[in-house]
Amino acid sequence: MEFLADYAGFLAKTVTLVVAILLILAAIAVLRSKGRGKGTGHLEVHKLNDFYKSLHQGLEQAVLGKSRLKAVRKEEAKAEKVAKKARVQKPRVFVLDFHGDIRASATDHLRHEVTALLSMASAKDEVVLRLESGGGMVHSYGLASSQLARIRQAGVPLTVCIDKIAASGGYMMACVGDKIFSAPFAILGSIGVVAQLPNVHRLLKKHEIDFEVLTAGEYKRTLTVFGENTEKGREKFQEDLETTHELFKGFVARYRPQLAIDEIATGEIWLGQAALGKQLVDELKTSDEYLAERAKQADVFQLHYAQKKSLQERIGLAASLAVDRLVLTWVSRLNQRFW
Image (tube, rainbow, N blue to C red; front, side, top):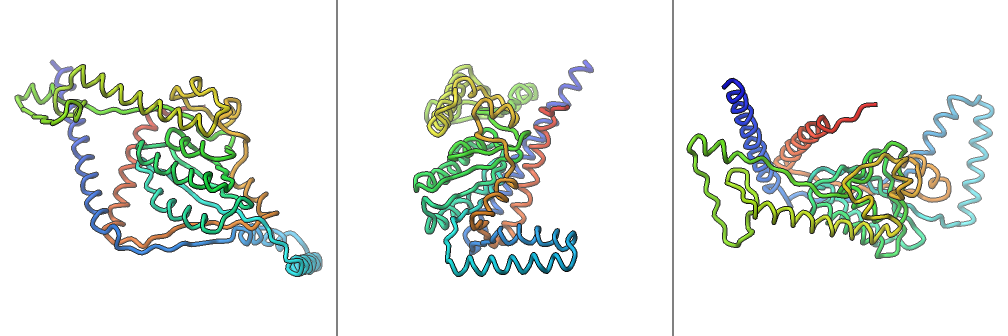
């Protein structure tokens, strides 16, 4: 009996948590929708060459003596003068950043950044995407991947750099790149589809609480949290997951034909070193290393579309991020790996 009481207490806590999360998400949606469209955005552009130059000059100033530093500055000024006179047109590199949450909400900025750079970029230029995402909703990451596909379709070389993680929907975005660079211990892969939800029907039934699910259309609702699930509904739900998985595999195979897609599309993840052997990435290299190299031969511009948010949107965004962190922390604890 004590076990049953503990189990009932656990179920009650679970139901409370699920309901609380649903209410929070609903409140967030209302807050964010109320202010949506009122703010105006603008494109911010920063030349990363200046950033790298300031780092270099700061170190020189600390290390070199005054006489040597003066000679170096004189040489640099002379070289810049010669370059200006020659009017040599350097290639351009446009840098984008994507930090993905469950809803891939950064897509709202990515779409404008891609539109802006495509108005100027040509096949002689390059786009570098610094990507960090553990995946999320299928339709959201599908749209984000489609934005990157616009770059490929325009014939502009696309390089994707992964320093920490690009898994599931994150790898769906990464695979669009002409080249994929990864840090040695970045997490990649997870080409699979997952869906899970609790069901408290038996608890409700025990307490004689009815919950009606009415639908028009046989498969309008296959599985439900509160209603009674059927084997037929489970089979249909699984069928939908398999269909989504096949579409995911086909998308990855289209952009990475060198992959043994059936071998790697098992939902597994690999660290960068192992991912290189599976051909999920092309080279082990951090984004810092790659961009510092490119800045020596090209003009490197970082693009960011910034949009002024209303107070309601800021509150909604903060609450949304808090929920994301809570969910991701919970998931990471269940799947934590130790050295």
